[in-house]
Length: 287
Image 1 (tube, rainbow, N blue to C red):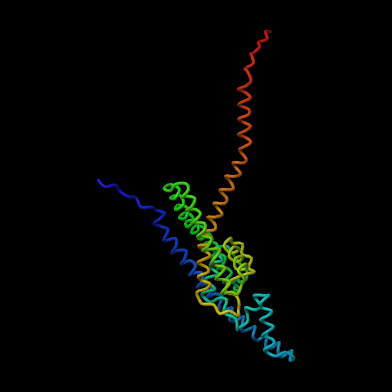
Image 2 (cartoon, rainbow, N blue to C red):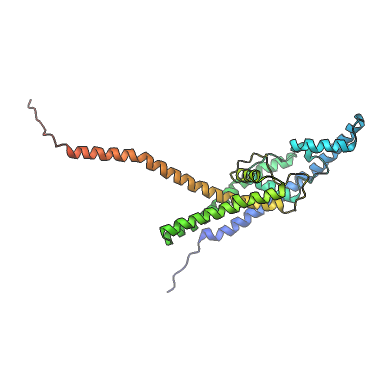
């Protein structure tokens, strides 16, 4: 009689979680684009009117000098430069997808935020459900990677096991920390050190916002550049979180070993002392 096989429940719902996570990012990108792009267009039109009024009041300046001033001022203030009509839209689909990814991953660069009340309210509820979904997604990715490592521990001998873990860490380091700065240096015009700094600050969810990809108005980016960067961030978060967990476990074991060593030696010393000392006779004092 054949045995009934019970399907692995975790493996069955993992593809649904991946599809749901991707759908949630796409949904957020579409809604943010719908809510914010029209307001951005209106803000840029108002900014053009303000520049015309400025030229009328200050006739010593011409349009070219004012545009140069706007570009220079925009490098120090993202909001000031983003209203310039010559700059790419901050709320096209690619930028909206990237923004949705920074919301659910809690990176929050701070260089872009919703300006409309509807966009702000939607952002609150989008993060309210998106952050737990992101945690579940990263947790599932981490479990999958951890399961492969545990499988190696069961079936592989100790030297080969150490080699496999080393290969895993080396491959992840190359894919998420070493090679991406080369791409960012080429596309953004950064140095390798700046690209590496951006990579680690992003994947560790610190997100200062001093370096953000796809924000240079003088660069022409491919449409999928920021979307691919958002996908790289998600998988990089899972890998770096697993590395942090491994490091935390090693540190905890090291501290426990160092903490319990004096106690063990003290206990052994007390035991030896009790064994060496002869048992004292009990003296009964009659009353």
